[in-house]
Length: 124
Image (cartoon, rainbow, N blue to C red):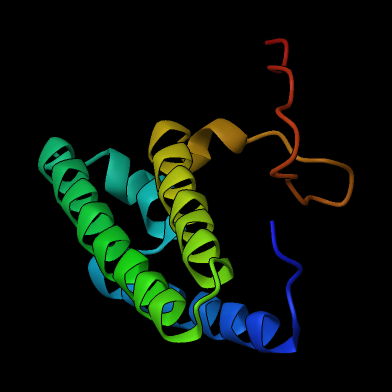
């Protein structure tokens, strides 16, 4: 793989910022899709379906941006980065849908839940 240069790093940073806006335009926030409001609606299945439509649309747009920049610069880094960015966003949405915030009721000392570990269930 080719070594990233300053131009590649700048382009990747711009892709990350742009991709955030694209995903925000097509899908609600990770907070929303993990909230009780989202999970306790009668329309949850339809909402999840529409989020997945948004994931597909946003992935297509962000991947196309990465491809366009790759064609312009002749370097693979922008396309690879755009695919990685899409993977992070889609994985994040799918994780939040599968793990409602109600399941994070146990907190670490200080009241802050960590996204990096799951907590054992409290004994009743």
